[in-house]
Length: 300
Image: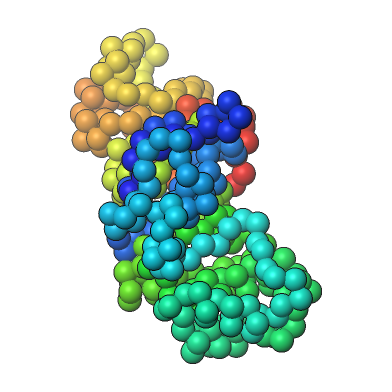
């Protein structure tokens, strides 16, 4: 389990994180999402022990992460900006990793090289960006980590390779109870693989929920009422995140339990009433208080 408790961090007077709490369950895949500059990479660099917080703690299995060699030996990290030793091939990098990580699996390493179709003798610096990302996944997953930390992991990978990478990760979660934390702008992909979601904004955790539970608490409603009907009193009892008129039909985004939404709106005797599923992308936009061009800096 990864536990972040009241984590605060400032850089040259800029507060990047503010009393942030986060909990990643063992054997789960946790998606960390937020607008550009929200603090996602800063959180990850604390969790991987690169940064030390000004206040608060980061723990794995109850142990502090910063300056903890034993924890880091059990952790795999794929950053957004990759680094390899100059002039090294994948085979040579594998030997270096083998000397650092006690759970290194040479059979997996060789099998993954063959599966991804890379040349272990070719210098990694001569690889394309996508091939370098594949090489990093091969090295990281061959350490057989208990914790896998991913920062924008699938950028530069084609759909076939993305599917193969996720297969390895999901298999390790199922078979070894590996714990995964992934930060990504690809919300459609995260929606298909994550168990839990944390949404951060301006260095603060806004929402942290199981994905299924999050979906059950926020709804898109299309509703129409007779022209003379005043529904303000009905909506007052609901938490309406967004309201938009489309001809005679209103679009409502409401954060309440489904049964409560239905009971309240049906009492108003609507002419049209439909509840539609929300995507993670839509939940993200409306939970941060905007829609369409009101939210800037989001890349889908």
